[in-house]
Image 1 (cartoon, rainbow, N blue to C red):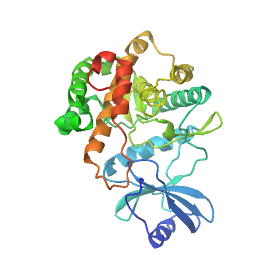
Image 2 (cartoon, helix red, strand yellow):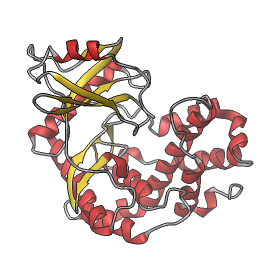
Image 3 (spheres, rainbow, N blue to C red):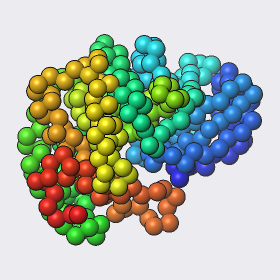
Length: 319
């Protein structure tokens, strides 16, 4: 459950009084997500999402995230910009945390997307990349390739508590992938960097929302597609690959951004990097989240198995 900070009805009512948003009717914590505290807020006028940014989100990054959402919304993309209060302020403080009141978008996130839904999501990512061609803000990737070795070192041999041989497999994968990471040879732009199925809202086969931009950054454009491919194209365990979903994502994306021969040749490496990134962050959380915490830990081995799919030579010890 992703509600780390409790908000009283009195504090929330006072918070809403800064806006032309109506009076508080109800507020319910949202269980999905792991980074921030989220509430579905209903007022006498509308529904909103209230987000309180927890310690893993640097308050100094919020102007970038809000600027990106404002830019995309201004281009007509289905993203949830923060709502400004009567004084034109987007980023507030509530219960000692930075907080924003965010536009509510209709739609549901999918646990088992179909190929037509995946193709629509791939097109939506391409539309997003086209829309940021004139976006001028910049943010380094806080989980980019230069962070993997340090995070691996922080996890250390404790990785073998998750699965015997995990330390050696991830260490070897990092040694192979990071030196070959040809970051300067690719197009770069603002990317989402975390467009899992639960960050895409859909009604039928139509994308109604792209949400949760709190890993957004400036990085390799096609890496964004590789992250999405690794997230959408497998079952939850990472054992079963669905080529129809992977092909549909790529087909949808290529309808606007066809992959160059170089990008196609390097795509497996980019996908392997995505797997290393998520295996490491999940492993860190697995090792450092208390057993009684209200947060559902995600299995890092699901991404080690994906890594083995993209490059079998990188994983030889973990089943």
